[in-house]
Image 1 (cartoon, rainbow, N blue to C red):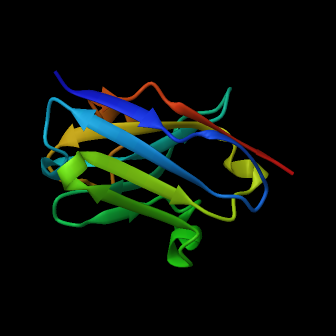
Image 2: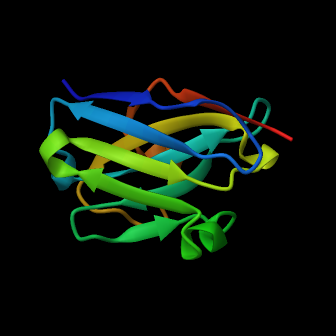
Image 3: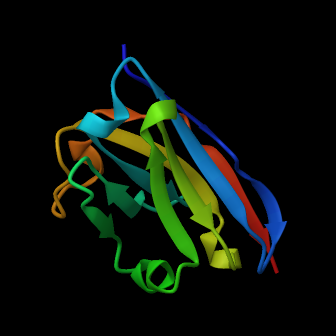
Length: 129
């Protein structure tokens, strides 16, 4: 049975950092498309970043610039079957519930929330100004 367990959320001040982790069980991380979505109450889930075994990395347009300057980094440790999201220079608008997702195979840029079979329960990130 595939399970995803997120950790690492919390409350920080603007400019602070958090590293989210998603530990997978029941499958091999390296054979799946894995990534992060986030959701603010009352709004739809928003993709943050995805990565797969082909080292494809897909960033949402809303955060792509922050990955470009390494404020956000997505990575995975196959030995630990764990996906990470390092977030630096956090802003209040990053406040959301962050969810880990997984889907067998490679990632496709046209995938939306409905295309992911497996979801974690989420970890809350709160950034205060």
